[in-house]
Length: 391
Image (cartoon, rainbow, N blue to C red):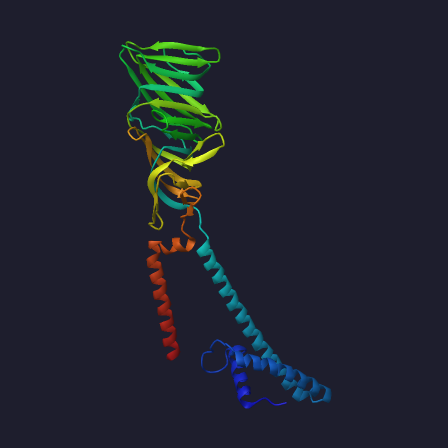
């Protein structure tokens, strides 16, 4: 059996480049078989195997060895080519998978800044909070406390078992009534609501410590037996220190009657919820009145309208400042931190606003120099490679 001269030369060239890459004077080039040549070689392999078997049966060992040598080298060439094809397909598939992940996956840890006005907010403290030493107490017209309550006051005989405390002004007496929150323990579930005549703080799963400066007020303590009333400090102000707690399902409450602004700043939180339960069916409604969410990684800004839902999931490195605005009976809050998800929109039509991995990478401005340097080095490499081959 004979092989056409042109095919034989092509085979010899591909064998030299692929199987013996050190042969020849010039630097070897990667062997990439043309599809037509690959099909021809496979057909020729079948014919050469048959010819080698015939020659061996006829006893012509020299000719059979030449056929077997051709078969061996051609099989090696096709195997090497198949390996390169498989590697190429594998790399292409890997790139496709990575691109799909980049387009679809929305990773957590999304840095955001939220500025909003709400009628209520629930949060969970990730670290202890203490009031600044010079922060003033809040002037109020009335105070109510209820829940797991502990009281202490120098010179006052207060009941030991108290689950409710009310302070209201006395008529025709010099009045001084101020409240200061001093400490919130880590792990406290704190809810703030503006539905009443002032801020209402619900404390569950932790504790709130504070103090009340009272003069010209009536203190009414609710115990397990009955109510006990005590008129406090017509001549001087008394200081009542309290610790308030409760279970998350049955929190303690601190209700303040005031027309003065009030705020809590520097709260470290790991959970935020902007909703309130309404009705006996356990239906939750949004408490958002307006605002915006800014994605710090991409610069995108999303407006929040009244009654919009906002779901951020778990929070990391969350810093919160919240202020009570008495004229509007609402809270204004500012939050910065990393959130697990970002869903906003009307109830039932929430949209996932978290950017995909590809979008986050694209908007990383600090990577612009890296991308530019990579493109420059790639061009430089190919330029030097072409120059070296040309020389």
